[in-house]
Image 1 (spheres, helix red, strand yellow):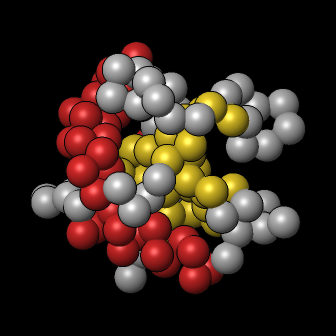
Image 2 (cartoon, rainbow, N blue to C red):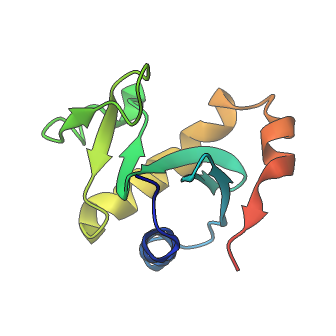
Length: 117
């Protein structure tokens, strides 16, 4: 089942409401969406579920979150409650700091990201 445009729009809205000075964009891939934070891959939407990679810096904050594979053959990612504003704002803040060092050579991915508006 592919993720809906409406759910992707809702996720973007939640992300924007829980951050300041962050730019969100997306890329649709195989009926699902990759959400970029300041042009770095940050969130994955599959089957209308929001996932974030198990970055070491998020493990304590998300220790109680469910782990799941977003698609067959994938590693486990954290499943996010996109409506939990308190946790979401902390995740965005952490990712905004750490993603540039993880993806410093991702100019090809950045070029393909679409603005969400």
